Amino acid sequence: MESIFRILVVASALLSIVFWSVPYVDYLWLTVDQMHVLDLGGFGAIIPTYDITYWGSLIVWLLISVGLFFYVSIARTAFTVFMVINIVLGFFYGIAIMSPLEVFIGSIISMSDGAIITMMYLTSIGGKFSENI
Image (cartoon, rainbow, N blue to C red; front, side):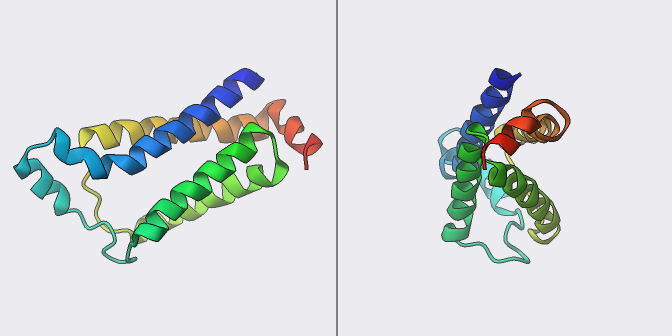
């Protein structure tokens, strides 16, 4: 069970890095017309986005992932809280137009994050977090 949990945490972290980076390399495989369509998305329409918040949230996810990997109890709480905050903030980001690769990776990340939460609270992995404060 531990190895599955750790693999999920590492896979989710690596996929998050790829997901955050995809908008910066989409132009390598998408046509000019497809790039124009992606630019029509309303990301940041209601809550302004800045590079520091964009990359800062990735750094927070990665730090939390390191804590999860080593069973740090505060990381479990932080992961859950940060997940809920991101879900609520999703209402204020505006319209999202994503490439098929972004949708695919985002779906895998969502499933792995759900599995991580399930394992943290409903399996024996939860006991590992109470051992490490």
